[in-house]
Length: 194
Image (cartoon, rainbow, N blue to C red):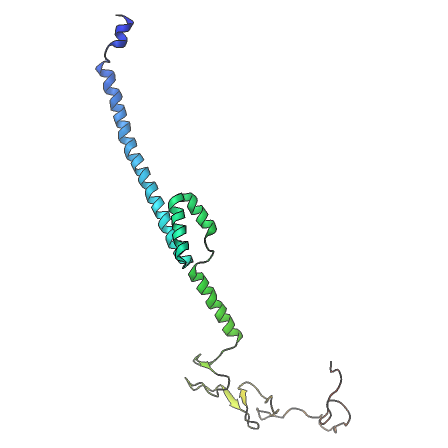
């Protein structure tokens, strides 16, 4: 046999049957693997677009910003997601609302809204009793009739002793009032007091 006849001769059936079988097996394994990989990337791409849309809706009410962010991620995929993460608003609308409620609460505490100690209903500063539960809030001074806190022992308006004990000391006992001395009754204090 010549070399030319060996090269031009048809291949033997043993060599042709093993090669296509091996390629068919490889093709049977790689085809579904590629299909699963493509399906994963399609589902992943759709999921980040949906996540971006939900996230931007929770951060702004501006329709144009919502559309632009979603299109950015849909077109540029993971790269668009990184750009969106850099440019998105820091706080969600819920966080902004919560912060505003906290600020309003602090402001309300600073303006000292009065509440009843018993039922925590809102009361005004000149109420003697709580209109909801009847709890006594303030008492009138027996001398000047101004409303006083229950814990006070002296009226700050007329210096009346509310506890029934000795009143505020005007002078030391047994000592006469000293005329001309600042701080004694009838003598105004002048100059620097400190």
